[in-house]
Amino acid sequence: MRRTFAGFGGQRKPGPAIPSPNIWHWPDVYEIENRAQDADGALWAALREETGGWAGLDVVDVGCGDGFHLPRFAEDAATVAGVEPHPPLVERARQRCAGDPRIRVHTAGAEALPLPDASADVVHARTAYFFGPGCEPGLAEADRVLRPGGVLAVVDLDFASRPYGTWLRADLPRYDPPAVDRFFAGQGFALRRVVATWRFATRADLEDVLRIEFSARTARAAIDDVPGLTIRVGYRVHTRRRPTGVILP
Image (cartoon, rainbow, N blue to C red; front, side, top):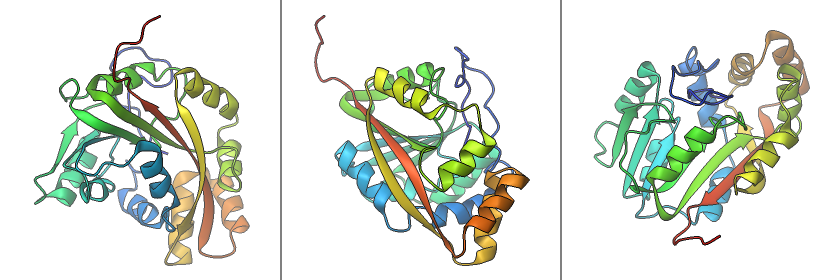
C-alpha cells in the first residue's frame, strides 16, 4: 500500500506527502513486488474493460511511485503523465522511462496535479487512494484534469478477500471496508472486485515482500500461511466517468 498523497485521511488542503511504509524505504524490494503482482493479468484485463482502454489516449498515473506502470500504459497510450510526491521515487521513475518521449514524470501530490484542465482521458491511481472519506480533494482534482467522458480508475486492495485481506485487517483493525465501499458508491463510482495472482521467482523474494508490507508479527503469520511461491490477492476497481454534458437537477 502506498500512502502517497497529502489530503487523504481527512485533510482538506495540500500538505506534505504521507510517507509510504514500503516503497519509500525499500524501493528495490517493492520492485520485486511489482514484478510479482498480477501474474495472470486479471487486474489489467479488468482495468481495460472498466475504463474502455487507453489506446491512443492521454493517461495520468497518480501516485506512480518509481514509475513501474508507466511503460505499460505507454504501450498503447498517446501520452502518459506520472505524478509522484516523493523526489527519490520521481528520479527513479524518470530513469526508468528515459528515452520514451511519450512519458513525463512530475513531482506533485494528488491535490495539486501540475496538468491543465481537461487534458486526460484516463486518470489511474493504484493502491494510493485507500483512505475513503477525506480523499475528496484528490478526487476533485482528478475530475478537473479529465476530459468529458474520461474515466477515473481507483484500484485498491480488497480487505474482504482472503488471505491478503485477512493480513491487512490484522494490521489495520480500524479500517472499515464496508464504509469505504459506501463512500466510493456515494461518490458515484462503480465497483468491480478482482482476484489476481502474485507469483514470485523465489521463496526469499516472497518473504521479503511480506516483511515490508506488514508488521513483523503479521508477516510471520503470512509467511507461515503461504506454502509456495504464489499469493491470491483481491482488489477493488472503482471507476467513475466524467459526464459528457450538462446534468440538470
